[in-house]
Length: 171
Image 1 (tube, helix red, strand yellow):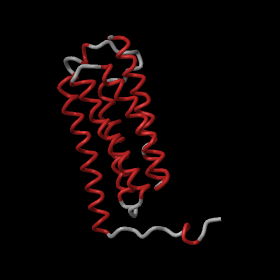
Image 2: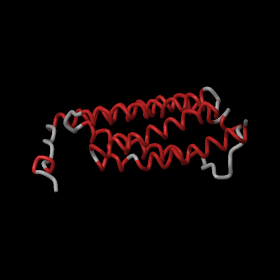
Image 3: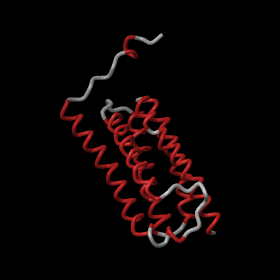
Image 4: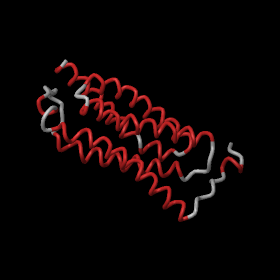
């Protein structure tokens, strides 16, 4: 049985802080997306188009709406965690989230800009592990935020299979 203290809800931040946290969450996630796009888009028509891809490779148009939805979910999850009162668990969750974002953007630079499916593969393993660790850390502070990252973990697991196949077929 939970004590009254454990059962109490933490105070909600003010309206202004909610807005500020929302802007911060959107800005950080959007910056990650833009950093990845800078490396990706110039390499799609040339280098990527010339790679042999597995039969399960989605058409190129699928990636933008999927990633847009995932980035929206990531920003929402991050906003929910940012709004929580300061604690060691919240800080750990934020650090893990930011690390997985850095790995997210870095993957595009390693795979597309460096023209290296192998570097992308190395990155995506670490990225997925940090996503899972982030989900676990988010679950300790906000279950909804954790659930918002489950589609990301699933998509990055699929991306691992796709990246592995591209590396295998072109290595």
